Image 1: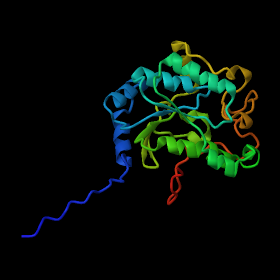
Image 2 (image 1 turned 90 degrees about the vertical axis):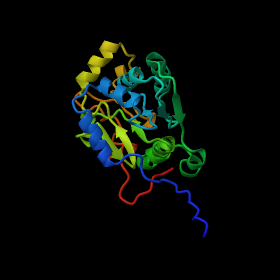
Image 3 (image 1 turned 45 degrees about the vertical axis):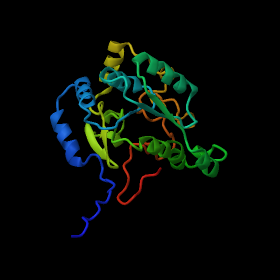
Image 4 (image 1 turned 60 degrees about the horizontal axis):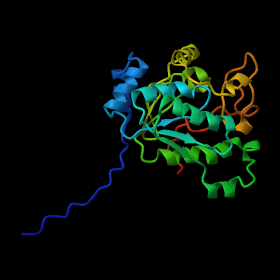
Length: 252
């Protein structure tokens, strides 16, 4: 009698979540208040290996405070593009201490890629998409390796490219949670006041949306809040929130 065939080890490369999972979560938490929803998904481990991604911009305090109230040990990922406002870096430390988040992780651009593709540090001035790819998208892709899901601060009202945001969605094989997707500006302001959250120091200087220093300008009265981002360019997103195109491989 022959020996039984040796069982081969198989690496499971299937995504942790598929669209059916997002649909089920959207159905379960429809109408559920944001904090209660966050407490449930984090306490029950429904997100798998997860982290909250924060730019530490003018509205970031709301999401971080909500996540901290649900589970202060949730990792926080920040991409330091090495082109940030000093005020943003200081605000990061202030805000994390204020809300009590315990696991802060900062990722920076790959030094070799910077040397090859942005040696003089001026790529933002002639190729903002390429600059964002090197300094933001690629580091963020590295930071998300090993995660099953991530928590985003996107809100539908911020621009026309962010309309109709579902709470739970699938992006590049991961579950993406948008707890504030249906919040409006008044909701954010009320929460800031209710929780006495610190404001970004540049907000009072007419910067309602803050990104990298070279590509962020002041916003004039009556302009869209994100009008100061990449002013003069046909560009509205850094690329972190743009899903891969069919057949496109993730950049690591």
